[in-house]
Image (tube, rainbow, N blue to C red; front, side):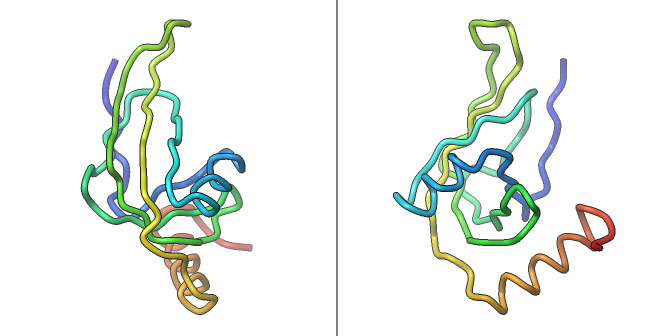
Length: 105
């Protein structure tokens, strides 16, 4: 058992529904497998499941727990600060590939 630290500038969605809720309603709760530490109170860049930067979000809560099925999970609650424009998205996506995701095709 241990905590995995997330990069302070990355919040990557793996679930399209969670991303939709953020973009549509301005708030969402994202579930991640394992215990993770998210920078509560900080603003981070949100990425789609295909690694495209889409928004700036503020992490409002990060709760790590063992669920009823016995799995370690972290629930991350966030608020939409603003959507990125096309140029910001392109630059942030390119930087993320170089720094976090690996080489871009």
